[in-house]
Length: 203
Image (cartoon, rainbow, N blue to C red; front, side):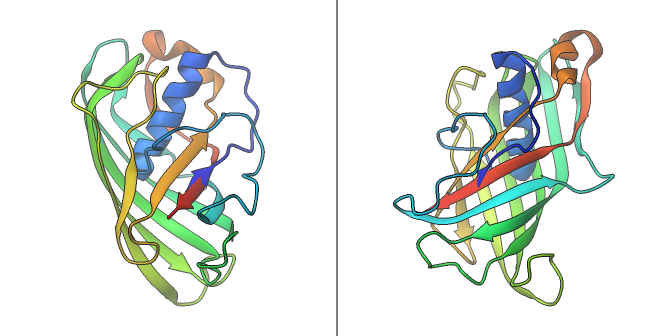
């Protein structure tokens, strides 16, 4: 899944990259190769793209980072619920998947400059309707195993795969834009994240 932010925030490369990583981790949707973090919609018709969606954190329910991210590296857990909307299947293989609710859990050793040993799981509940109404049409399970060598904002994010359910075997890519709060991560800490993103699934 590729997820693009719908908000433009004037932040530096490192904080913006970290925000993308945390939202991704929260989704357990860490991208294999993060696309540009500028706003925009992934080009429909791109080769191998099964699904693209716009997404956002649930209203009033930001992604929770515990303990809050700071300048000190420590074991950190990220939990949250994300909503996917306006899903489109460029190759026509996932046309019944129009929206989804994603429940995530990820953990690793992290600080404001990056993370190590990131692992996580996620559950995606798919709907045929564009507003997550009616009965679900399937559930996908996500998983990721971060590289032991660690991750930094200047490098690619660990890959996430769909392990079972609709789009099984697909690789998820995400993009997100941080908020100005990330500029003060080392001095004030970051205990929650909210915002918009985009997601793309390739098979």
